[in-house]
Figure (cartoon, helix red, strand yellow):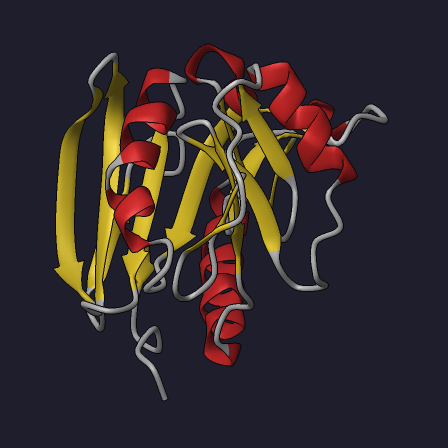
Amino acid sequence: MTVMAERPTMSGTTESQSFEELLQTLDALVVPDGSKAEIIKGNIVVSPWSKGYYLDVMELVCEQLRPHLPEEHRISYGPFLYVFPGAERAFGPDIHAGHRSVSRHASTHLDGEALSFVAELTSSSTRDTDLSDKVEVYGRAGIPVYLILDMQEEQATVLWTPSVKGYESRVTRPFGERLLIPAPFDCLLDTAGFKAP
């Protein structure tokens, strides 16, 4: 299995495990508090704690989008695992929105295709995956809006019009500007305050 920290380290392999076996291994894995484990390209990847100010950014995004949520939807941040069986991936997006029914069961594996919005805040250990693999997986799953907050480049990218190739539409703005979040939200996101203190 691959365990990823700020500097990736290898501690075995999962090449012979099926996606279902990887999910079982992930469920049995003891992950340090504040870290999350995901399945990315056939490996279990553990990401480290986020920087403190990321919490402020996540709360700002949720506060701004909450009034524009589709009916019966909720937006939150935190360690929830969304599964994409067709892509053999399982992600724990930094911010996620979906219909309330998504979480009304006892499983720890939530339906990724039921999401209406995801956002990822990049870190040095997750940036490449956030900008590439997740773009393709989230788009193919039909998630209407994917927001990438590139904390290293201090810019926000919104992607929409999901397709089999990922997303067909995208706009990038530097932190400090307003960014249109398309349907089903149709609102402006103010990115002032997203920069590192």
